[in-house]
Length: 150
Image 1 (cartoon, rainbow, N blue to C red):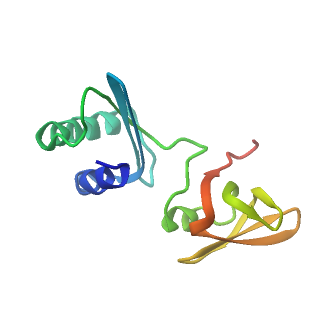
Image 2 (cartoon, one colour):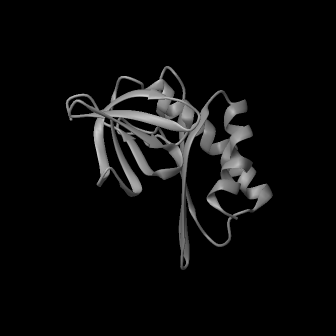
């Protein structure tokens, strides 16, 4: 099962508990693996939230058994330098500083660090050194929020 398929399986359970499935990381190698679930909600995430989601997701994974072999399940908040993976993530952080890496060079560069100016269903606009760069979401390899002061 791919990470995307696993996210589709887990998302309804996470949302039913009142959280957003912000990201999912799956690393399966050899005898052990890792399934890391990142959850979020507007008021932030605490240890109790992680434990609640961990119990529900663990039960679902035990029943559905979508991950082969042994693995460790971790549930966490996305953190201050959270990944931006959905249009909604980008929309929430308009005006903040982001770090974007593209799959191939755009305007002679692959790395963009600047203020997120706007977002639509297909593109984001990032201001870097006073110059605006429109980046298609399909060209983005990774995007992260830059914590204030970093």
